[in-house]
Image (cartoon, rainbow, N blue to C red):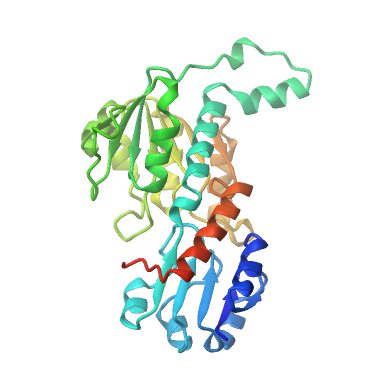
Length: 315
C-alpha cells in the first residue's frame, strides 16, 4: 500500500477519498520541517502548502517519492528540475482557487474605492463623515493586469460587468482577443503609461523578485492604485511606501507581503510595516485571497483526480 503524507490543512474529504482509493494516508497539519526530514523516506507521495520546502536536499531524503503535490499554485517551494530528474511527478492546482483570488482582488478594490473600511469603523464609533468618505466609481477606469495565467485571467473575467477597460500584459503568453474581446493586450510600457489600476498576478521567480520597484512605479501614471494578490516579494515594500508618501500611488490592496510572519520581524521590518499599515488608503488581508471554503474543496477534488490520472506539471 502506497503511503501519502499530508503536511498542511486540507479539506477533510481529501484524506478520506485517498484512503478510499487504497492509499495509506498520514494527515499531520502540525508536522515540522525537521519531522518531515526524518520521515520523508517512508512515503511515496507528499502534499504540501507553504510550510514545507521541497528543495533538493529534502527531495534526496524522499528516496521512495513518486509525486509531490503543491496545494494551489506557487511553485517556488519545489525544486522542479531536480524532481523531474528523479522521475518524481509534480502536481499543482492553480485553477482550484483562481476564481477566489479574482473575487478577493475585486473586493479589496471596491472597498478601497468606496472607503468601506474607514466608513465602517467610523459609523461604529457614531461618526457620520459622509463627505470624507465619498468614493469614486470604477466604471470607465483602466485596469492593467500583469501576468495573465489562471488568476490574472480570472480577475479579467470577474471584471467584465463593471464597464472597466481591461488591459493585460504577459511576457510569456499571448492573449487571444477573439476569445476575450473585452481585453486589450499591450506591452508593459503601454500598460504602465495608461492604466489607473495595476494588479499583479505573477509567480515568484528570480525574474519577478521586486518586479515592482522604484523604477517601475516612477513610470506609472500619477495616482495609480496597486493590487498584489500574487507573492509578496513581487512588490518592493519600501518603494511602495515612498510612492504612497509622495502621492504617486493613490492606494494599495495587498493580500501578500515580503514577510508574512510578524513574530519574525526585525526592528527594521517592524518599522516598515507599521508605516505601511498606517495609511488609510492601504487595504490589507492575511494571504487569504485563494483560501475560501469552496476553493478548499475544489483543490481537494483536483488533487485526487491528478494523483489518480498520473497528472504531472510536465505533461
